[in-house]
Image (tube, rainbow, N blue to C red; front, side, top):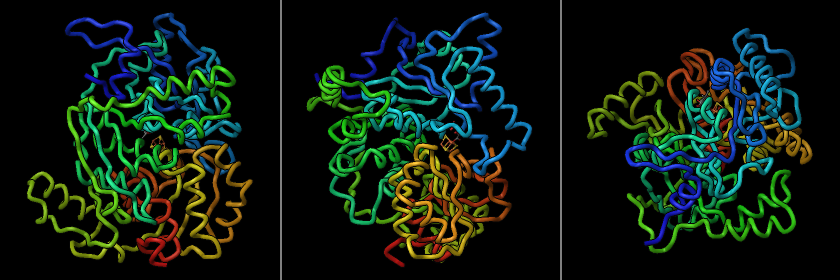
Length: 461
Ligand SMILES: CC(C)[C@H](C(=O)O)[C@@H](O)C(=O)O
Ligand code: SF4
């Protein structure tokens, strides 16, 4: 019988297999940031060990960095960042510190440098490592003790997850984006729907997505509970990678592409589970609640808890409406926001900024609007295209790279009761600051919302 993409990549990396034990996997790329690495390095030090493959390990500062130039004023954040610097220097790991041209959100810089490649195993002490699966890699988040294991051995014990196919039929209508697609998928299968699975996104609509769009989709796999998300590599992938600093060159490139072309699910392979979704029926999608599965088409209304047959979902909806300060039946388009955030590892790439700029060109924002490039590389590219001028002319703030308002670990936060339209991936209670209320949206909806002050699609302008 044929094999799925996930099975192929997994089997390629098994260094040891024994009955009743997890497989020992070889890890091709280990990404590090300041939040989840300090104890791992402490562990190494205590055991007198070194980093096995510093050349396959790369660190960046992203979660705790301010997005305006200047020192880090919060003492906890400062300590985290200083600790990462000290650890990187001591263990010989390449680090992209604040202000460095290569700095950025960990899941933005891997692909940007061409470090993320098809067929790899990629880990990071961060749940959104699933982003890298967009290249046909098995990429997943690990805990700090696992970070220590990978640092010490470049391997990781892991049980092979089951496989799920999400077949996206038809084409996305004009104005409907990768973000709308993944929000609709999570609303359909639920925040636990992917649990225990590596998901492979397939079908016409997925093949037509750009690499940026594919990364947006894979990024949020974890929000459906999946271990990882993957998309088989194709010409779009190869074109994206060609010429990037760490991509192979010359003959090595040709050999790599030949191998990468084999990284697809065989026609006779079987998935443990298959879910189908019709792309052509989708419209811009936003969340109304406090988990990424509590979403609905922008053209609809805030649901009533009674609509949920499942008692757990009903109770969750009730709590969410209370926290969000929303009444059932309110048209989603009537929800007023005071802050708009465009950025994060979900939607902080150049294509996302281009989409937002296209909508903001010649218009003015009526809300506090933060535009935060996912990396310094994205920032530079955006400035070369003059996008920053478009944002500034519209009255938006143009910032330095970092996780920013995706989570409340740096100065960019919501105040209690403030409401945002945010291109990030989590809308949990307090995610963007204590008492803050988050609506997850695409960059296009974020930009249109900044113009009207209510949840808005570009087509409504
Ligand atoms: C801080 C980090 C461990 C966390 C994660 O694992 O995802 C963060 O990036 C997030 O998005 O919540
Ligand atoms: S941008 Fe957000 S989701 Fe991505 S790594 Fe940073 S905090 Fe996590």
